[in-house]
Image 1 (cartoon, rainbow, N blue to C red):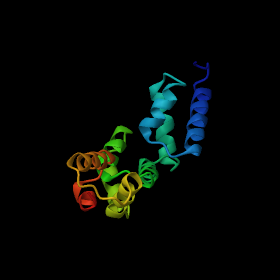
Image 2 (image 1 turned 90 degrees about the vertical axis):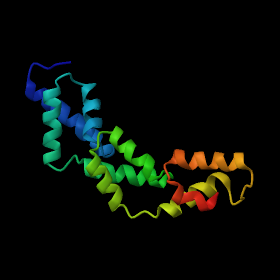
Image 3 (image 1 turned 180 degrees about the horizontal axis):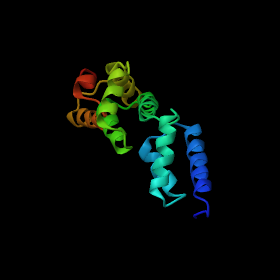
Image 4 (image 1 turned 90 degrees about the horizontal axis):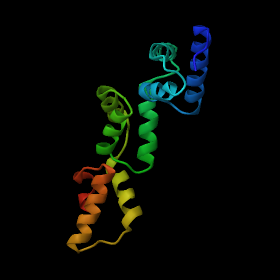
Length: 150
């Protein structure tokens, strides 16, 4: 849908972007994808996003911090989090810096996830140990974080 007045279209897209940002932090890529559902004018969309970023209303750094806190709270490890941020359009340097600045004890997170899933029981069966190992790898933990639990 294109309006006769480009200023009206800009205002409409800006309002839509601000509504999205009011709900939760969004990466630039996420905003672009969501605004593309409302307009096909990529130049206008990029202009809106650049303006919001310049005003401090959109930040990939803040998005990464928020996203990482949520995912760590759900029990995901660093090896899974970096690719997820990359998939959402966060630059590698921003993602790595944000992850490094998070003060997370990955051993504690891994222990909590492991015990929530498998309890306190130690298994001596090789198949069960392998299953537990695969689960922890899937969650994004390195073997250093959980090997002592298996």
